[in-house]
Length: 118
Image (tube, rainbow, N blue to C red; front, side, top):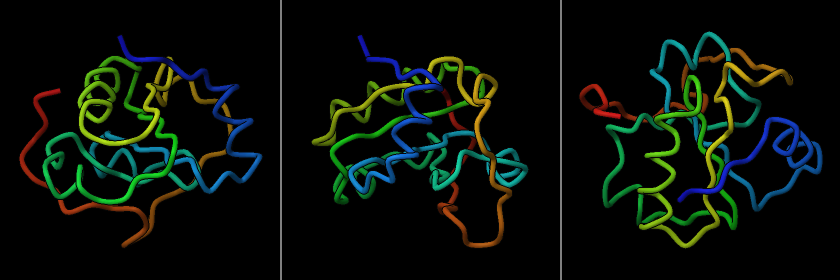
C-alpha cells in the first residue's frame, strides 16, 4: 500500500524549500495550466515509462491528481520503479488549500502521450 501525504505535510515540506522533494501532478495539461501546486511537474500517467523511471529522482516524491485516487496507482508504479520514497497526496489537488501557480508555456510540462488509463 502506498503512503499518503496530507496537504498540511506537503505545505510544510514545500516551505522548507527541500531540494530532495518532487511533486508530480498527473492531471491533464489544461488542468495543470489552470493552477497547480508550486514547483510541481506535470507528468501525466500516460507518459510513465523507462525514460521517466530511469531519470534521476530526488529522495522523496509526492504524486497529486484530482482527488487522490489515481495518484495512488501512479505512486505505486513509481514506487516500484524508482529509488525514492513515493507517496500520494491525500485528497489530491481538490484538497490542496495552499498556494497555487498558474501554468505558462514550458513550465513543468511533459511531452504528452495518449489519455491515461489511470
